[in-house]
Each structure stands twice: as C-alpha cells, then as structure tokens.
Image (tube, rainbow, N blue to C red):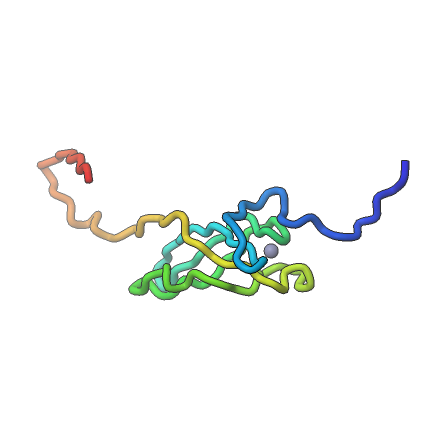
Length: 115
Ligand SMILES: [Zn+2]
C-alpha cells in the first residue's frame, strides 16, 4: 500500500455545512448568540478547518443581520482560509431578558400564544 501524501486538505470540511457558493466563496450558516454587551455569530463547523468560529454580530441594540456577509475565516491555517466565507444567519437564540422579576405571585397561568 502506498502512503497517501497529505497534500491538499479536504474542502469543504466533512463536518461543515455549506449552503452554497458565491463566486467560489462558501456560504456558511451561523447562529446568533446574544450576550449582555455583545452579539456573536457562531459557525458550528468551519468549511476550512471544521472548528467553530465566532464573529462579531454587533451590540445588543443592533440587528445582527447587518453583520452577515463576507468575513475572513478565523482558522489557524491562514493559507487555507484566505478566501474567507459568507455568514448567513439561520437561527437566532432568544435573548434572556430579565422580566423574571416581574412575576405575578398568586396568579399562575400558562398562556399559549400561537402566532
Ligand atoms: Zn476555520
């Protein structure tokens, strides 16, 4: 058996999800994660290295969708990720707002809102 030389890394990475390509640049799904002071866009598996990366998604008052688009990949191997990728939000995590303190003590009602 001949030893396979590790010449070209596999692209896209087997773990990664690529939604499509725009001029050869992969479009990757990201999830929005809201924190107290900052919003982040998380790639669960990078198409270049297969790891998760975080990109800035603005401040809490801002619409994280404004931060979609082309970014430089945060990979360790920059040669590999030079082209970067295009972020597309697929999932938004609800913000944990502090309305819990405003609880009505005796009236415990579960309301199902269908919209
Ligand atoms: Zn990467």
